[in-house]
Amino acid sequence: MAATVAPQAPPTLDRSRRLLVLAICCMSLLIVGLDATIVNVALPSISRDLHAPVSGLQWIIDAYTLVLASLLMLSGSMADRLGRRRVFMVGLCLFTLGSLLCSLAGSLGGLIAFRMLQGVGGSMLNPVAMSIIRNVFTDARERAQAIGFWGATVGISFALGPVLGGALVESVSWPAIFWINIPIGLAACALTMRFVPESKADRPRRIDPVGQILVIVLLASLTYAIIEAPSSGWLSGETLGLFALSALAALALILYERRRVEPLLELRFFRSVPFSGATMIAVCAFAALGGFLFLNTLYLQEVRNHTPLQAGLFMLPIAGMTVIFAPVSGRIVGTRGSRAPLIVGGCGIVISSALLIGVSTTTPVWDLLLAYVIFGIGFGMVNPPITNTAVVGMPPSQAGVAAAIASTSRQVGQTLGVAIVGALAASAAAGAVAATHVQVSDVGWWVVLGCGLGVLLLGIATTTRRARLTAKRVAADAEPAQTERVPVGA
Image 1 (tube, rainbow, N blue to C red):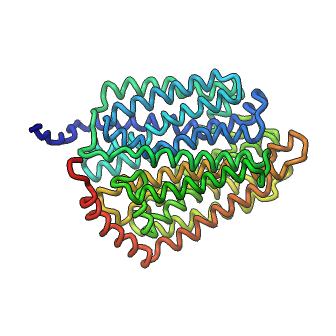
Image 2 (cartoon, rainbow, N blue to C red; image 1 turned 120 degrees about the vertical axis):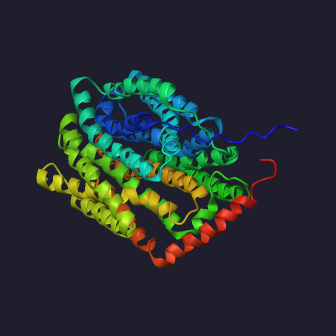
Image 3 (cartoon, rainbow, N blue to C red; image 1 turned 60 degrees about the vertical axis):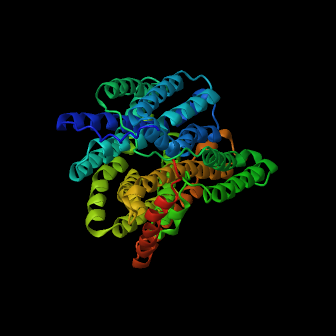
């Protein structure tokens, strides 16, 4: 009879060691955050050097976010099972290697492939780093402060990305935007090996390979159909076939996951109105962000003929407002709930995108800056309540799964935002000369406005008393159900 091994308690580290672990985890978030905004600034230069059409530029962004979205939950499960430090180090190595290969890419196809490798590595960083922080910071108050520093790193990376990317593209060339990840990644990997303790879950969730494959098929077929539709035709057999494949994958995923003992996607959670709403709010908010950054980068550099550095400086108001208002939103959520931040956030996205409809080469700079400030306020307010709204009322044993689904929804939203806005802009430019295919299109700004409206309406609908009652019912069912569904001998 095999001996039963009791799960080990997480190691107790002194405060300086805990802060060092937090700094290492924030380094991973920094390079992932930088990568998103830096690449946007470099898109026009990449387009010229690699002769990339609009769809190619979309794939440079979406190849990364698509892989990231598809593998987030799998990476979290693997870290719980194999060891968080081990998976975190693999992620750092893959992300750093992908960055190096991206800088050496001589073709559009190669760059897209290496961006996918970055996505594989990135999926092992943020969710696993958060698990490491939760394991190391055992005191609730200290953990909340650590997560606050973690969240502030997002704003810092958002602020640094456009300016740093613009300076590197202008002074060196676009491959330089990937060089910045290499020393940070190598340093984080060495420090992780030396200072981060290993940890595993007491009872990790089972791997769900079928569910994982269905998620990949669903997201990949949907994204490919949207991006390639302007060139192949929205009603072509290829496009309709891909949309049908994504629909079948979604149906198969729902039917299969309902029968799983430990599913990749907990469908029971979606009976909670706040949880379902948070998922859709994340999709809408990050679709707005992805579409906004994509359109605005091309507008500033291709329509207004600004240099990459000038375009990066134009983005500072968005980053600054995000840094300022994200903590404000977090405090409001903690004291008064999520409704007010979500309403303000949705209004900010709607107003800013409305101001940008009809922009041209003669639009006054102050009008642009006003729109950027308002968008930054809106996005800064809307991001913190997403996770809180997703996990509200959930039992502690299910909060991590709920937060992982919310994080996946963020990446799905950004992927779809770039795909939809870029596809509609390309369709609007069909038949024009090649240079106009990267110009901003009003239809894209209307999409961003619609996403903001979705945030506003969902924010109101999911924070009512009746909505909160559905979350309580799901929470009451979830904890007993989790115990009952554990297979004997698991």
